[in-house]
Length: 92
Image 1 (cartoon, rainbow, N blue to C red):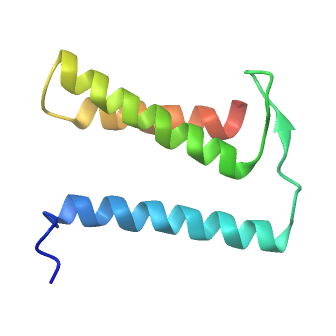
Image 2: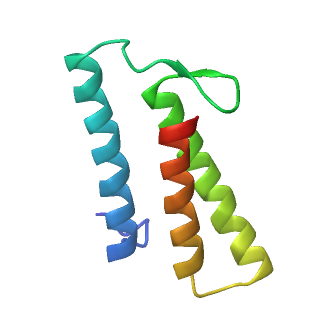
Protein backbone atom coordinates (compact mmCIF):
# COMPACT_ATOMS: atom_id res chain seq x y z
CA UNK A 1 0.00 0.00 0.00
CA UNK A 2 2.80 2.44 0.84
CA UNK A 3 5.24 1.11 -1.74
CA UNK A 4 5.23 4.40 -3.70
CA UNK A 5 7.72 5.86 -1.20
CA UNK A 6 10.90 4.39 0.21
CA UNK A 7 9.88 4.30 3.88
CA UNK A 8 13.08 3.77 5.80
CA UNK A 9 13.56 4.35 9.52
CA UNK A 10 15.37 7.67 9.00
CA UNK A 11 12.53 8.86 6.74
CA UNK A 12 9.91 7.80 9.26
CA UNK A 13 11.78 9.49 12.12
CA UNK A 14 12.05 12.73 10.12
CA UNK A 15 8.31 12.79 9.44
CA UNK A 16 7.46 11.87 13.03
CA UNK A 17 9.72 14.66 14.30
CA UNK A 18 8.19 17.19 11.88
CA UNK A 19 4.60 16.34 12.81
CA UNK A 20 5.49 16.22 16.52
CA UNK A 21 6.99 19.72 16.31
CA UNK A 22 3.90 21.01 14.53
CA UNK A 23 1.67 19.36 17.14
CA UNK A 24 3.69 20.81 19.99
CA UNK A 25 3.47 24.29 18.50
CA UNK A 26 -0.29 23.88 18.05
CA UNK A 27 -0.73 22.90 21.70
CA UNK A 28 1.43 25.85 22.83
CA UNK A 29 -0.58 28.25 20.67
CA UNK A 30 -3.86 26.94 22.10
CA UNK A 31 -2.57 27.31 25.67
CA UNK A 32 -1.15 30.81 25.21
CA UNK A 33 -2.32 32.38 21.94
CA UNK A 34 -0.25 35.16 20.38
CA UNK A 35 2.30 35.48 23.19
CA UNK A 36 5.35 34.34 21.25
CA UNK A 37 5.66 37.20 18.76
CA UNK A 38 8.97 39.03 19.02
CA UNK A 39 11.48 41.00 17.00
CA UNK A 40 14.82 39.25 16.64
CA UNK A 41 18.22 39.59 15.04
CA UNK A 42 16.83 39.77 11.52
CA UNK A 43 14.53 42.66 12.47
CA UNK A 44 11.41 40.67 11.62
CA UNK A 45 8.42 40.08 13.86
CA UNK A 46 8.26 36.29 14.13
CA UNK A 47 6.04 33.78 15.88
CA UNK A 48 6.88 30.22 16.92
CA UNK A 49 5.56 28.91 13.61
CA UNK A 50 7.69 31.39 11.66
CA UNK A 51 10.77 30.31 13.57
CA UNK A 52 9.99 26.63 12.92
CA UNK A 53 9.59 27.38 9.20
CA UNK A 54 12.91 29.27 9.11
CA UNK A 55 14.58 26.40 10.96
CA UNK A 56 13.26 23.78 8.52
CA UNK A 57 14.06 25.86 5.44
CA UNK A 58 17.57 26.68 6.67
CA UNK A 59 18.20 23.05 7.58
CA UNK A 60 17.19 21.93 4.10
CA UNK A 61 19.66 24.40 2.57
CA UNK A 62 22.39 23.27 4.98
CA UNK A 63 21.93 19.64 3.96
CA UNK A 64 21.72 20.42 0.24
CA UNK A 65 24.87 22.57 0.37
CA UNK A 66 26.72 19.89 2.34
CA UNK A 67 25.73 17.19 -0.14
CA UNK A 68 26.76 19.42 -3.03
CA UNK A 69 30.17 20.29 -1.62
CA UNK A 70 31.17 17.29 0.49
CA UNK A 71 28.77 14.38 -0.01
CA UNK A 72 28.31 11.92 2.80
CA UNK A 73 28.44 11.32 5.81
CA UNK A 74 25.70 13.63 7.06
CA UNK A 75 26.64 13.86 10.75
CA UNK A 76 28.26 17.28 10.42
CA UNK A 77 25.30 18.97 8.70
CA UNK A 78 23.00 17.39 11.30
CA UNK A 79 24.95 19.17 14.05
CA UNK A 80 25.00 22.42 12.08
CA UNK A 81 21.24 22.16 11.47
CA UNK A 82 20.60 21.61 15.19
CA UNK A 83 22.69 24.67 16.02
CA UNK A 84 20.78 26.64 13.36
CA UNK A 85 17.49 25.56 14.98
CA UNK A 86 18.67 26.67 18.41
CA UNK A 87 19.78 30.00 16.96
CA UNK A 88 16.44 30.50 15.20
CA UNK A 89 14.35 29.80 18.29
CA UNK A 90 16.49 31.92 20.61
CA UNK A 91 17.57 34.89 18.51
CA UNK A 92 15.28 35.26 15.49
